[in-house]
Length: 129
Image (tube, rainbow, N blue to C red; front, side, top):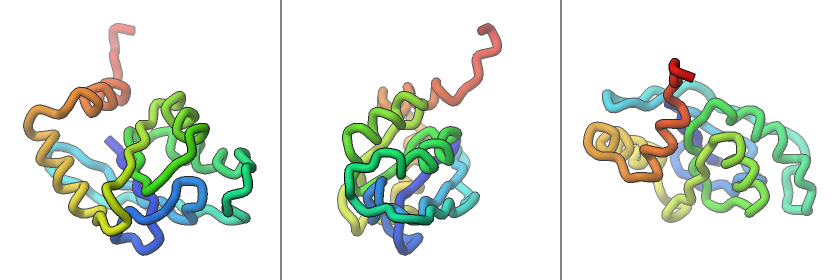
């Protein structure tokens, strides 16, 4: 599954979803993780109430299961959830992407919590449908 992180330094989860100029995307499984790409966003991303500025991010993250952020507005969070992407708030701006990825790999090997199992079900194709 793909996991995304809002970041300004590619080390920490330290960017607000709406203001983030870069979002790093990783592929993760119970066997490990791999960096896939950095999504870059241009233009005026400051807080101004203009909801349209998040549309490119919503479109770019549609194949991700989870996006980690330092903060996210209620409307943006709702729009992500509607697209099947679960926003998760980082513990702090000092939280490292690699730490979260390592914890997720360990969690996937064991018994994932209900919210993660739900997110995983959304990404697993059901061929009976």
